Amino acid sequence: MKTLAASTDEDLLLAHTSDAFGEFYDRHARALMGYFARRTHDPQAAADLTSETFASAIVAQHRFRRDGAPATAWLFAIAARRLADYQRRGWVDERVRRSLAMERRPLSEEDAGIIGMLAEEVTFELLADLPADQRDAVTAHVVEDRGYPQLATDGSTSEAVVRQRVSRGLATLRRRMGARR
Amino acid sequence: MSDFLTDLRNDLVDAHARYGQRSAIERAARAHHPSRARLAAVAASAAAVTAGVVGGVALTRGTDDQVIGRRAPGVVARVALGGSATGLSLGGVASESGAAWIVVNVGDVMRVDATTNRVTARIPVAGPGSRLSQASDSIASGLAAGDGAVWATVFRLNPPHANETTLIRIDPKTNRVTRIPLAARASSYVSPGGSSIPPLGFGGGSLWVLGPQGGARFDPRTGAVADLVSWGLGDIYATDYGIAGDDLWVHAADGQLVEFDARTGARTATVAGRPAHTVRLAVIPGAGVIVGEDDGTLRRIDAASGRALWTTRLGDIVGPIAVAGDRLWAVNQAGRFERLTAISLATGRELSSLRLQPTLGTPQLEYPLAYIDGRVWVASPPGHAVIVRP
Image (cartoon, each protein chain N blue to C red):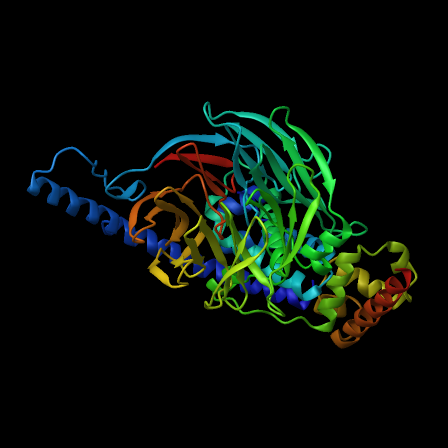
């Protein structure tokens, strides 16, 4: 039996289990967030659209077929429709999320910074210019997707220190990216 | 992973589990109880037999995936379009020169022969050879037909050309495409600050590109801007539009409906209404407009008096609607199924209903539909056109 990690995207959607959907989310959430962030230039809108798209995917999952479009194309087709609707109306229609009784999650300043990075497709050149502790922390947390507790353990330091390094690194990147525009 | 993405993951996994349980309960309930449709059909059959009625209107087979009512709309054909047909707020399917013209992947226009039901051409409009607009910054935002041509609009999403709108003219004789960039003045008028992807409509002999504050009226022979018409809504913006014959109706965010003469842009009527997030409009030329709201409510508004002639409720959500003869056709959602439902324009009474599954389906109802040569065409997100005989 395949593990979730070894399963294809199509296998994950056709499994119809919450764990498999979680794995599917893990694989595509950041790409989807970046897709929305680049097109809306608004972190909160990108977050809301990401939420609505995955909520829509839950409701539409039973219609997914292996012989149809690939799973990523299926997901991005939903995303494109949500984006077009947002562009047309100027606000995110969150009907599906609400129908699933999911609360709207507010964004922290750090979340907004990370989404901004996903939007800007920050270059490694910019990352390389950061102080070493900040560069390593941002790379590990944002690029490699490692959690704060793990980074704190690996670095023999506290979570608060890791968070501070990531936060400062992101702030520096935002300033530098702003200066480039 | 950011805290937001982590929290969202947890929320989604919980929601997935709840939704799965709900679906299982619904399936179990359906397996143990005859559907309302079956009961209705059995009751109707019994009544017909008792009364000795023979002939005339056929009774239904009584299965939930077929028909509720007295006459079955039959599926004539399903046409594979090779792309998802969705994303347009107005149009999406148009009729011209004996063909149905359908936008797919918000980038290509498919030409389908209305006699043979075969795709005869794929015409890229959103860019050279456009086939999938997922990563594209150009999207088709509208489709309309009139004055011997098919028209589309293409909107650019990203810098450095963000918010530019191009009018596309397709010659049905040759399928050749002519691109007419909107002047900056008209482009910013229909999409101020890039706030809206402008839909397109044809009425009163004019082509209209529609925006939240006003519309641009075009001469279809030259593609030149004839007029810029303000909706006169002040700080309120328009959310939805309907156009047919010489009538253009605009729905504003505060719920009011405003009618314009599509030939001149003159304002002809204003009707107060209630705010609604998503509204669909279907114009009855010279007589008024049907308003479909996202809670499933449908109202027929009389143009002369501004009063609602009837109000009805159609399932949980109403999607695209279209007027055809003495009927209104609506894509609606009832429970977990999308349906195509016919309603009497005179009374608002439901006449028949066809379940569209398993061919169709997305969480929100985006199924462009149109009445072409006596048949209803419904284009679907998975990429089919379902052709129905009323």
